[in-house]
Amino acid sequence: MSRAERKIDHIHYALSTGQSRRTGLDDIQFVHRSLPGSSVMDISLSTEIGGLQWSSPFFVNAMTGGGGQATADINAQLAEVAAVCDIPMAVGSQMSALRHPEERLTFQAARKANPRGMLLANIGSEATVDEARAVCDMIEADGLQIHLNVIQELAMPEGDRDFRGAIDRIAEICGRVEVPVIVKETGFGISRETAQLLNELPLAAIDTAGFGGTNFAEVENERSAQPMSFFNNWGIPTAVSIVETVFGAPDKRVIASGGLQHAEDVVKSLALGASAAGLSGFLLNILLTEGQEALTEHINQMKTDMQMMMCALGAKSIGQLHRAPLMIFGRTEQWLRIRGLEPERFAARVPAPFDS
Image 1 (cartoon, helix red, strand yellow):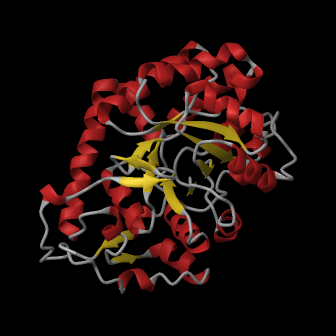
Image 2: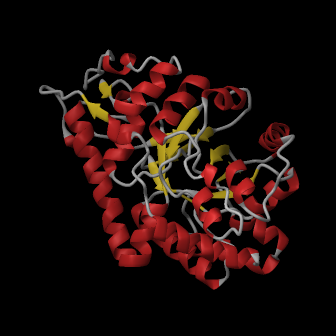
Image 3: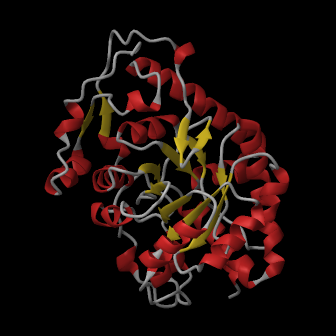
C-alpha cells in the first residue's frame, strides 16, 4: 500500500471508529460561582504560544495531507474555515511531501486557501534540521509541530522500529529553525516523565494529544494482517495527560488535544492548566458529513459558549481560568492520586477577582 493510499485509509478508519469519549474530561466538574462579578463583554479568549498571539485558544490540529487530491481538498477547506473563524491550523505530517514532491500541493493547499492565516508545519521526530526547515518553507509556516508517534509506528506493518536519538534531534531542530517549535503526541498522551525531558528544551509548547480521540493503534490494526490489539487501549487519557504535562514541564506552555469536541472540553482543558487546545477528528467529521458552513457555525458557537462558561466562572482570561476551582472524580481522580499529582489541589484553588 502506498503512503497516499494509507493516508486515505486513515481518514476512513478515523471516521468509522469515531470519538470514544474516554478522555477523562467527563470526570471534571466546575465549582459553581453564584457571584462571579463578571461580564461577557469583558471576556478575552486570546492566548500566546511561543511569542505568537492567538485570538482563540483552540485551533484546527494536525490531520492529513499527502493523500493526493482528496487530502488537498480537505486541507483547503479546513484552511478556509480557519481563515473565516480566525483560528490557527496545523497540517498533517509532511514527511510524505519530502519523499514525494508531487504531494507538496496537498499541504500547500492550506496556505493557498489561507494566505494570511497562522499555519503550523508538521514533521516526525526522525527528521533532520534540513527536513524541518523544508516543511516550514513548504507552507510558509508560522510554527512547527514535531510529532511523537511511537505506538502508531509500532502498530504499522511498515512503521519504524528504532526511536533512538529523538530527543537530541528535537533539541537540534529547536536551536536551528526560525519558528517556534511544539512537540506533540499523536493520541497516546504525554507523561510527567516525558514532560520533564521536554522541559529542558527550548520549546514553545508541549501538545499532550492524549488518549480518547482518534485511536491510531486501532486504525493501523484494522488494516494489519497481524494486529497488535494490546495497543488498542494503550495511552494516557487527555485530562490526565494535561495534568501530568503541566506538573512535569512547569516552564512550558501546554496545549491540550486528544478527543476534544465541544467548548466545555476546551474550557475544562484550559482550567486543568493548558494554554491552548487542538481539535481534529471531530472537526473533520463535521466537515466531511455536513460541510464547511456547518463547521464554521460549530467553531463560532464554540467561541460564544466558551465566553458564557468563563463568565459563569468569573474568569475573564485564560490565566484566570487556571485558577478556577474544580472537582475531579472517577478514574481521572484515581490516576492522579496514585501518581502523586494531588487532585485535591484543584478543588482548593482560589479564583481570581474578576476585576484584578
